[in-house]
Image (cartoon, rainbow, N blue to C red; front, top):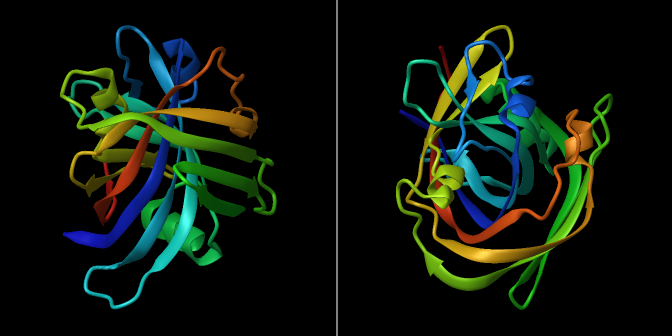
Amino acid sequence: MDLLQMRWRDALFAHWPVDPAVVSARLPEGLQVATYDGDAWLGVVGFVMEDIRPRGAPLGLSFPELNLRTYVTRPGRDDHSVYFFSLDADDRLGVLVARGLFRLPYFSAEMRVSREDDAVTLRSRRTQSGARPAHFEATYRPTGGQFTPEAGTLEHFLTENYRFYTDGARLYYGDIAHPPWPLVEGSVEIETNTLFEADGFERPAGDPLVHYSPGTEVTAERIRTV
C-alpha cells in the first residue's frame, strides 16, 4: 500500500561509468553491483520534490533533493535497483521523516533551485552537523527532443528503477511507482561537485552522460526487510 505521493520536477541525471570493483567495495552484504556493457555507474541526480504527503492528506512538503547513487541487484534475483550513498535535502523535517520511515542516508543542506529560460541551476551545501561537507553547484538544460527510454537501453538502465535498497542494522528495500520518465538529452555545466569525495570516492574521469526530465508523479511504499 502506498505511504507517500509526490511529484519530482526538473530532474538532472548526470552519470559517470566506473570500474565495477570501485562500487562493489562500498556495497553492503547481500547486494552486488549492476553493470551495463561491463561498466558500473555512479549518478548525481537532483530534482525538486513537490507536494510530498501521505495519500489523502490535504497539504504536503516541497523541497529540493540531490543524491549520489549507483545500481545494484540481489544475487540470484532480477530486481535491478538503486542504492544511495547519500541524499541531501533542504528540509529538516523531511530529512528526519525520510531517515525514520525509509532508513535512507539523508542529510540536511541549504539548497536553491532557480530557472532562467530553459536552464535550471541547482546549488547545494550540506549543513548537517557531524556530516562530511558536500557542495554542488551546476546549471543544466535540455538539448534534444523528449523520448521515453526503451527497455534494454542504457537510458532505461539508468533511470527506470522502481526499488531501492538501504542498510542499517539489516538490509531493507522500498518500492516506488511512477510513469516512465520523459527524458531529454541534456548538457550540464558543473561549477562545484564534492559529492564523490564526501562519500569516499575519487572523482570519475571524463564528462558525465546527461539527461533532463521535466518530471513525473511518484508514489512510495513502506520499506521492508530483506
